[in-house]
Image 1 (cartoon, rainbow, N blue to C red):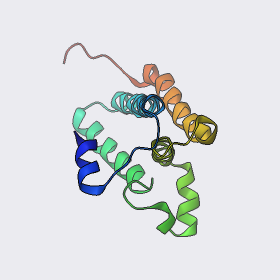
Image 2: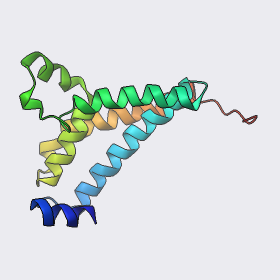
Image 3: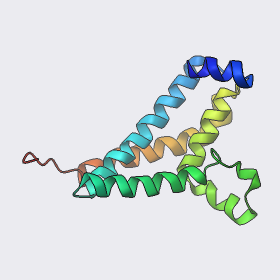
Length: 133
């Protein structure tokens, strides 16, 4: 529905292929989902986890190029945001959306996958099951 609305209102066009875009989207969801679970295991309360995750997310979001185009950043910030994993999420999804092939997006896909692997490796080290509620 959102795509149809954006296509109608903003003349949005999809130049990629659905399967690679769907796979890239699932990779991004899994990667940052694992980071979310890892963060959830670090803190004792849901409210603390929520506050820290919000700060973490918004810092990554606003420096990734999804809110403000990175080419408008000063040089030092542009170079620094190359280290931001959310930058690679944005680059991967935009590039696959516009029809880039895997050999053109593999660096961003690798960074996103490595963030996900790190999150999944750290989940058992941080997550505690509290049956008492």
